[in-house]
Image 1 (cartoon, one colour):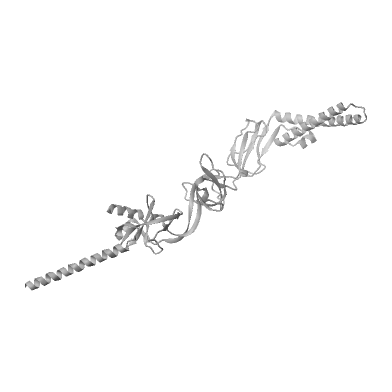
Image 2 (image 1 turned 90 degrees about the vertical axis):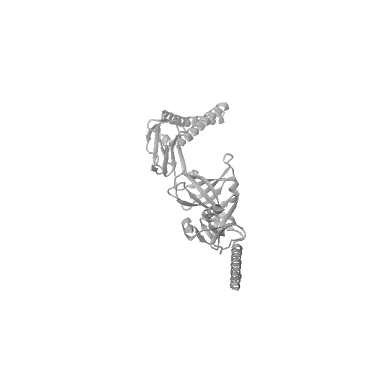
Length: 380
């Protein structure tokens, strides 16, 4: 009986020793599978993985660009914004359009009337008629002087009178032409107009009206502002520290706050001067294609894409940021190991990653990294 008990005890001890050795080996194998850059492990059940929305996959090669974020406005080229000013002082007799109306080149905008218009035309006609007599008087005195029948000083005076009147007439002609009155018609029939008509110089939309019936406007007052919205561009303000990353031809993605719509554009021009107040540089972008729904003056946000390359990348949800370090959760056995990586280019949706433990075959959590990180912190 004693023999049997002793044998049983020895056998049981050998079995327990064998179990302990097997457990140590499994622990060693699991430890060897953990990436060298790992900071800790977390294990979740399949139900927990589904509940947290954790997706497992591998990094993929994608073309990703870095980008510069900026803001700006939709603007019109200078030649597509026309201001119509009053050329003279006058009373508004006719005003036709309202802001938002579409008008065509040559459409009547406003008529102005004033006694100064009448006075200016009368002065022109008086000078014009007197010019004939002054010219003849100068020619007659010149002929008499040639025949020694007239003093030279009389000839010089006649010449001066004629040239002064000629200069005065030419000045009045230019002034009337700038107002929009035809001097040829005035010379041909002597009809004086009491009012002038201002017409639209372009096709476009009325943006501003500063006239009403009976209003007395002064010379140089703004009466109408007209927009030709057939072409708009993006005027972006980029911080001077980012300008070195930009060049003409780069791709731009533009959006309006509160909208999911994206408008493609391209860098067309880059200003060579930094605004001393905002420390920004104006970047001119051309839309491709031209958006019909964006109005001039609309506030916009933009991304200007810089260096594009095909790189190994993961969704942004796979990255955990802690201070200046970035981590991913690599699949190890039935759990995940928190592994340090380096990040590079990002387009907002995907992020370039690299590291000694990372390859195209590396299984990792592509979504839900912050949930895993929270579970790891809770375990610790």
